[in-house]
Amino acid sequence: MPRATKIVATIGPASSDRETLTRMIQAGVNVVRLNFSHGKAQDHIDRAALVREVAAECGREVAIMADLQGPKIRIGKFENGKINLQNGSKFILDAACELGNQAQVGLDYKELPRDLKAGDILLLNDGLIVLAVDKVVGSAIHTTVKIGGELSNNKGINRLGGGLSAPALTAKDMEDIRTAMSFQADYVAVSFPKSATDMIMARQLANIAGEAHKHKPQMIAKVERAEAIPVLQEILDASDGIMVARGDLAVEVGNAAVPALQKRMIRMARASNKLAITATQMMESMIVNPVPTRAEVSDVANAVLDGTDAVMTSAETASGKYPVETVEAMAAICIEAEKSDAYKLDADFLNVMFTRIDQSIAYGALFTAYHLRVKAIVALTESGSTALWMSRHNIDIPIYAMTPMLGTQRKAALYRNVTTFELPHSTDREAVLKAAEDLLLAKGVVQKGDMIVLTWGEPMGQVGGTNALKIMKVGDH
Image 1 (cartoon, rainbow, N blue to C red):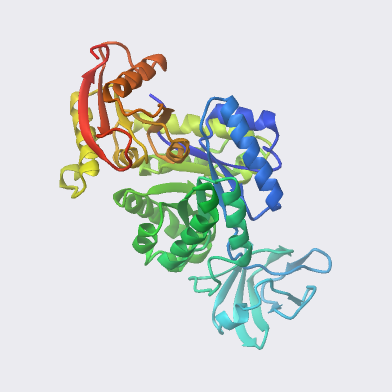
Image 2: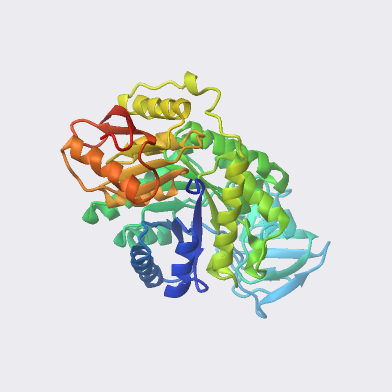
């Protein structure tokens, strides 16, 4: 059975050469993430072209995710690159300061003083430095150091509890969306959305930018602001999936709150027929070590058991010493975790309400496959929606999405428990069913005599028209 949980790998300086990227895709990368917080537009265009080439050479369709930087709120630079802050000392963040020193530092985000008041707690460098706001005078935020340490150039700033007013989409993000659409990125991840409106605006911009290529990407909301949590359902409804971005989220809501939030967010995504990606520090120690820690192994396995569609690497594969080994280790952990999970169709499966014929066919296929213990479920699909709906429920039977659409193959690379195959377009039902059966036999997925369940739409070749289900013994066709 193929690995159900997908792997999203960030590429960067450590993984942008052809040989390393080839080995990573062979090791199991399903989606390549381009992090627009680093590098120039041309770097991403070149890397996207290389991913497409290498994936084709490996005989795989790999999706590309463009991850927008968003309004990263940072301090400015220091005269000497860094300082050391002592507990109890006074320190000023001043939007008017050009170059920082031991007493003060500038701000990239000039509006920060307007968002703060006395008593607020600021967390710098992912929460390693803690400052208490004493007062705000004009452009200057006067603070007392609660937890000190080394502070270097351009470190990020969060406010405990969230509430900073920076918009989710910056001018840079809007330009980056245009760049991402120039190479038809399959997914666009939006950083720091606070509401459904942020996601709707990002989608509109991406659709307009992709119009020349007749391309509409899937939109992923990165949940990393405290204020996104109360409106999570609205954000989900406006997105195609979410990323549990545990770095900034942990800084804003506290580390201890994140594991339970992760489980809740993945549950909500699946219930809404949306995707979920679990990210941040999953294999962090493998930036410098050839094997993960036991805690990292448990973290990846728990995300799999939570039902995440994908687990993600960041610096581990972008700039770490062991990008290929990281992917290999992650794939092995996913496979073991999937084996250990006692798969049962969800207890509330029979209570699912649906009004669409194609959705009812998808659920009917799952129910039938589960009780007949068939070898494979095959969705003959144009848009991929039937395969997506099936993949929202736990079942230990692999789902194969067969489609003539290249964009659908790439998009479905992120769906849990879905493997995609290209099946040429045809309006001849019998020819298509025979071709699907032959493809499964050729790939070694089934043998003669095995039972399979197929779904398709009649008339053949239309989008969103799945209305037929067939139970078939391989070789009887």
